[in-house]
Length: 171
Image 1 (cartoon, rainbow, N blue to C red):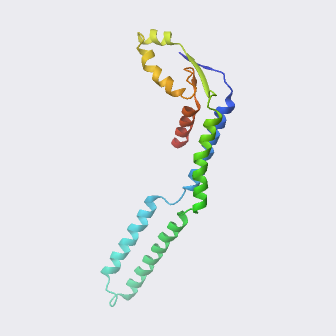
Image 2: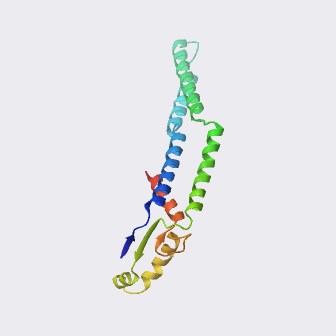
Image 3: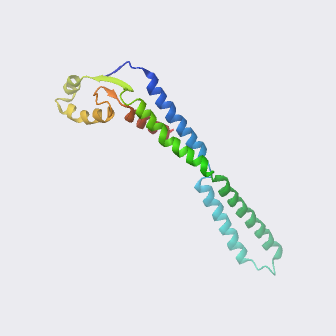
């Protein structure tokens, strides 16, 4: 049986909020045109180009010009989307630095602070599963969860940051 012990929720919430803010900024900055929209525009441009090559400009001048205007409009739209999606290099650089520095500072600050403390009764788990195999199977997972602290009854900041980042990536 695993029981949660009360710990201070401030460090865990602070790490979660920092991860959430970084992911929100990342989504806002990379909120550009999807690859499917670019592919759709490129396909439409290629279709119009083929249609223009099939039209005899001397005999069907009006149709050729209409198709050429559509082609030019789609090409301009694709160029506008490409220009819109490019971020200024300084903004991207500062955001990359923030993505590297914030987790490092959080890990450094809360290196020895348990984010979540719990107790598990190995004898109850062993009785339910029928032996000491449960201890052998659960011990590596608990060791990885408590990585910087090395306390088998807590979740460390590295595992908590990874859990928070995984949750933010899924949403």
